[in-house]
Amino acid sequence: MEIYTRGPATSGADASLHGVHGASFDNNTRVKKMNHTRIILIGSLCMICLVAAVMPVAASPVGGNAWNTNPEHITAMQAFVAYAGAKGQAQMDGAISYIGTISNGAGTAPLSAIESQFTGTVTSVQSMTTGEEIQQAESQLKSDRTNFMSTAKSSLQEYNGTGKALEQNINASVMAQSATLQGLENTWWTDRQTARMDLFATNDQRREGVLSNLTAKGIDVSQAQAVENQIQQEGTVLNAALTSRDESAIKAANEDLATLNQQFASIIKTYRAEHRIRVTPTTTITPVATL
Image (cartoon, rainbow, N blue to C red; front, top):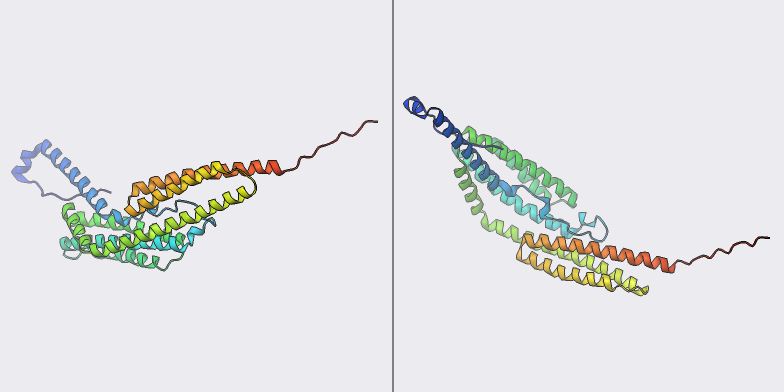
């Protein structure tokens, strides 16, 4: 998406002084302005784009797809949409305010219509009961965000606006809502940590149950227990990363947990296969005597 600002026209004697090199300079300047404004608009509105990776399932819970309707997971997803939606609305308000100023109010209607749809979807998420529904809503919000950016780009160009002024308006609008946004962000992090660590605890109980069951059958589970101990340690690391709100550390911990869970599952599969071989009776076939 390319957005650019219009510069003053060059005419008369000034135009003759520019010549070919002047035209080239003007073109280069315009390209730089286009790129700069594009970066500002995308950067300023990036929070409106809800990225699914921010709310990962991160591990398979007991019950397969139970995460889709797990109340804590749903609450965390709703909290994220509420936070990101409020910030997105504040950003949109700032952009609409600026477009309204440079267009004397003539260019705000299309943007306001998109914002209304965006905020309506954000509100509807709070009554949704499945992760699938919320993911679909996030897709709609992403589409609204893209549409808003495209429309804002056209308005910025049509009414001879500047990227710097747009950015200032957007930042001021977000700053005015900083207290509300901070509260929503805190709620999201709390709900996110609760949902993730409860999921970890549920899966940890499942692994411990598997180990107890195999031990009762006389199987030496020391190798799997060693991996389980590592998983528990990594769970502590994950919890600390969530507490400190360190996204890179959260991602690293989830990746390590995924690897350790795969190792655990592989070892358990081997245990069970070996156990089946031991308990399966062997049948001896006696050859029939030949007369």
